Amino acid sequence: MTPREQDQHSHSLHSRPQRVRVQQFGVSLDGIGAGEDQTLERPFGRGRFGDIDPGELFRWAGATASWTLRTEPGGSRGLEDYLLRDYSHGIGAEIMGRNKFGPVRGPWPDEDWTGWWGDEPPFRCPVFVLTHHRRPSFTLADTTFHFLDATPQEALQQALTAADGKDVRIGGGVSTVRQFLDADLIDEMHVAIAPLEFGSGLKLWDAPEDLTDRFHLEKIPAPSGATHCFFWRR
Amino acid sequence: MTPREQDQHSHSLHSRPQRVRVQQFGVSLDGIGAGEDQTLERPFGRGRFGDIDPGELFRWAGATASWTLRTEPGGSRGLEDYLLRDYSHGIGAEIMGRNKFGPVRGPWPDEDWTGWWGDEPPFRCPVFVLTHHRRPSFTLADTTFHFLDATPQEALQQALTAADGKDVRIGGGVSTVRQFLDADLIDEMHVAIAPLEFGSGLKLWDAPEDLTDRFHLEKIPAPSGATHCFFWRR
Image (cartoon, rainbow over the protein chains, first blue to last red):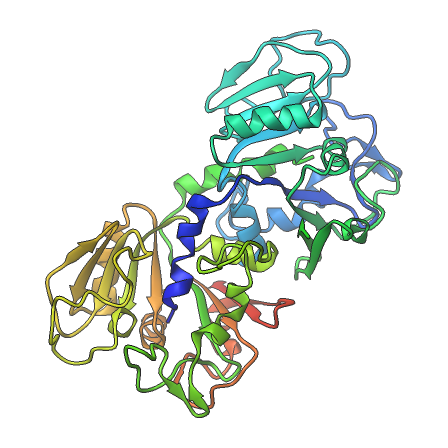
């Protein structure tokens, strides 16, 4: 039997303030979220031991029932499925770094290329891409991409307005999350540490404990081998 | 950086089949979810050691930020907040036993009494109350209560139709969950074991492992002291 108090928690979702969240961010045991030399074919770049395979970094996610690219029925409905299926709930806008939009660096050679997220990007909300090279906004299905040459604070202000009362997700990559952490703009963060090392690449941290001066930290080892780190402000 | 595959998982939520789920069900270390002698003032009844306090059984939930009855800001945003805030997502109908609706036994003495869930019940969907004593349906805010004298199979059929493609939650209490388990109608279950004993009362199980012939079981101890058990069909 569920107590009345417990059932009522859904009410609270309607009156909460907007939060700024990182969700399902993946790093290795050595704190690396992506390698160097990203290309169209190698979106996570290269570590010391070779190309970084996102399938390994996100193996825990791929084992869940809610993983979209699953080609056969099944998948777990444990803890990690809860983490995965929360991804879009309550999110009204995303901010991402340019490297999450695509591998192009410098001026845009071809504005016809609309990023590596396909014709139906999964964001389904306004997405603000941070770049020094602006280009016109465009819409693909339910997602509109805007390109901003802005500080984290300025970008966040726009995203909070666009999110219309919902939360803003800081989508990555590593440098973008670090920028927003350094500017102290993040309220909550879920980072999954995969049980492998990349040796070199873009580091989120030396250890999750680096952030405990500002955040509560809960570390939950999962049977998948991943360790889930949850941070929220002190 | 989040891989494209991962972001796309939200699509899968739209095409999934309907599931039958138990969520956030609470039991003691000795498998007890409620005591005997429920009354209006004592909704969880009495165990061997005195009245059962739902606040103790659901202490883990009360510590989260998403807990509605929280009177001051704060609360955790770790694993248990994910479990709590998933409560209403994707749910289109609930089935509950009569004892979750109220403490009255036998014929209804007064149909003006509309259950102990207040004027704005938290379910916000059709709720099917299993009882041998039918009474007319009524609506309170977004929740409509229907009263069925039906087998679990018959009730589930009605709830699945009413849920309009979404999932059905089996809301409890203990006897109702047991009935649906015995009829093999449950797809998934999250049960939180609180670190205390009640000594006597309504038992869900001797141990969670009782169910592993039919279900995968993942047990996750949380820093709160609760152990979260996730079950999904083999």
